[in-house]
Image: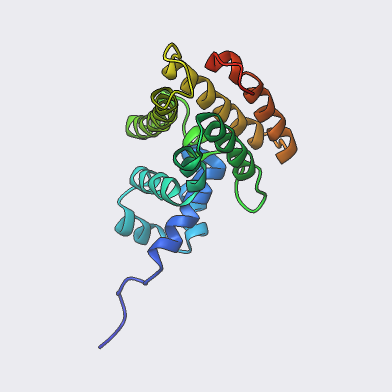
Length: 204
């Protein structure tokens, strides 16, 4: 039987990872279809057949990113014995991940599409949801610190979570601008110096 006309097979997961890295490096708007197909090693018909559209590909790529990149950053929040150590490890692991030179610097979730009018609403909505989930994870860990008696009941856990999420977002931009690992760790040191004021405790 002739093979003519049959679609070329490819490793879908490998292609998705390649697309993720293009979006990570260039953002949704900056990633052209030719950039994506070249990186993925497929043609446009194959891309559309496998993923549906550029928007659908981006959404799947960000989901893949969330599942495969930097998982240890968020695991630290759960496993660290104290809230302070959880936040410190969260930021230190962020600095390590964002400064790696074998992949795009910074964070896809932070940098992928920042402006509502620069990409389709579904994309910005998805990234906004993911950032909100990250904020919620920080808040939950701080609330656990309050429940365990490490942190005072008066702590505004949502405000503290916003502060440390904002630090992480800023580190993403710093990394994209070329900040070294040591420079990012200096930001971490500054953020942790604010811990006693933020947490309302004299514990270092």
